[in-house]
Length: 278
Image 1: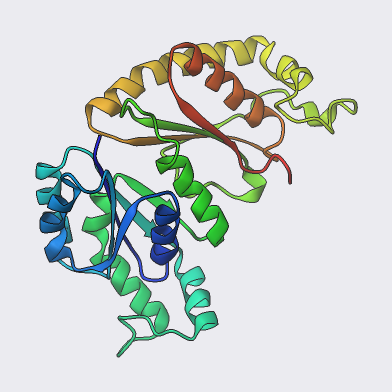
Image 2: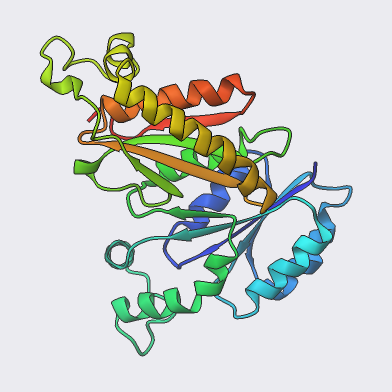
């Protein structure tokens, strides 16, 4: 199946890194493309390029309309929107000595906020939003590789299950967050403390409890209902995060258990444990 990825988003959020990552994965990349050419360049994919990535040169008001025209001509189009917090973008620009494109008559922070306001429509039309505030270039490359180098061959929605620790902050780019802190905590059992939720002993401790079994029964039913509904709406990516205090025991065990259930039903998915090594 022929594929096109369109990279857009905030200035300084990692568009050049993302374009380089896709190029390393074998995508043909056209960089700094004006949005007016998006529908036209889609014809390049016919007979020449199986996987084409379009990295836009910056904000243009007609982006949403041009992306819609592209989708009418190509079946498999993924719009990736890259963003980051104002504080992070200010630090990035200060470290590189580059000038933000909207900072001619504005402070750096005001320019970033102004651009974010102009990009509301582009962000809303994106299939995948990646917040790069906490990602270094290597981690951003890994994130894109997860999505585009190992995507499901059948074109079905790609599902990611993530565990995390609330004390390390909420994950920024997930669709659903489930709090697992109501479950018994293996941390308070000395012989279990050094293990993590991938170990059988932790999984048994967490999951073999009536409260956990009831939770998983309800959760698996909810997920079974939601996944086809999201796919029917055309969603390409879904990320579900499970959180506990430190992100090492309960959330990891629950994520692994849900992943096992989905795999038994034939679902291809990715599992990531953000804070398990912290």
